[in-house]
Image (tube, rainbow, N blue to C red; front, side, top):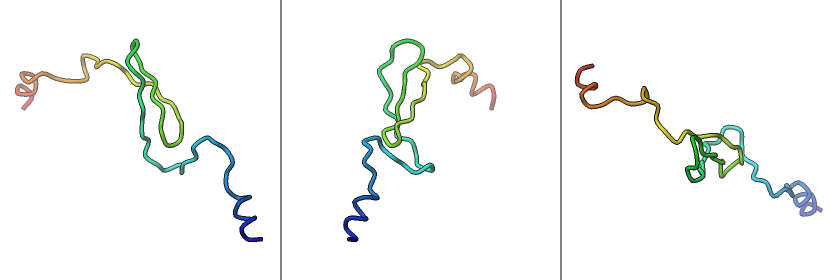
Amino acid sequence: MAARAAQASTPSSSTPVAPADHFHRWRIDEPSGPVSIGTCKVCGVTKNFKNWLAEGDFITNEEHRAAA
């Protein structure tokens, strides 16, 4: 009887189920355009990732030395 109850409580869905506080493990598609779609291997959520750095996203060595 206990074994039957345990079987009934296991999820039968094939979609991954993860706790809300997990760390995402992103699988990002190949670059094709300005963004690539990433899918979490744990929970299946999707997110867009930029395939470029905007000009303000980084500084050169000269700019770094001047700021110091």
